[in-house]
View 1: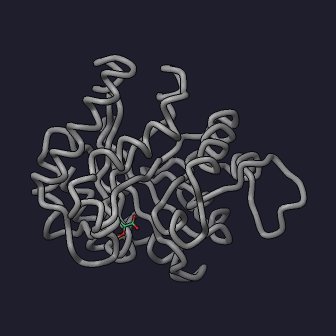
View 2: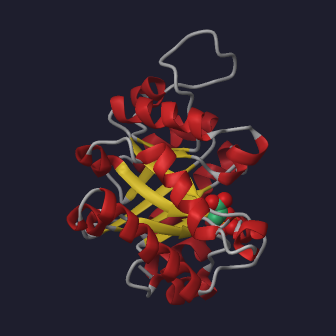
Length: 252
Ligand code: PEP
């Protein structure tokens, strides 16, 4: 059964002190584990992963990395591998975020390798994808999203999909304050389920959690999350504020 998930991508924000304070405040709001239909995930920067993993052990909060390299080890200065993340207790990784695609030249080919490495290391993947404004304006958004999903994920076995969480993030809505309307989000999420059902099965398609990301905040979360195919949110800016993030979590 798919779960309702709220995941916070902290990006390159929050030093150690701020990271700990944010977690402390979130744990005050959510002192015990949630029922097993709901999940809370936070993705701090690499350097703050170890203390946050420690702080959140046996709590409702799970910890994800924001990225990883596809190789296990080697001469890749400044990079971090899946096995290193697993070694510190991080079992989830965000891959394919639009900022990585656009600013760090992360191609579909690189993402195929990263997905493979994460799966081999038994990590869960929050896989991000979404169209740019020009692509939506040109009416190509369904095709763009289908291509991104097909290229990176349609080579997977049905069983691999247990480790996949999808995050539809229209690029024009990320960090811009502009949000997809609830109808636009629902329309795309339903389309994603349709292509997964066609490629794999209706059952698998029903079981995949599909998050929406793009300027989701406390004030618009309820409406977006009330859609039948929107199972949660990947949150950037609003995840940096404990009250905002908690209010979004309470909307799932
Ligand atoms: C994101 O970066 O994944 C994101 C959704 O950011 P924001 O919520 O700030 O738009």
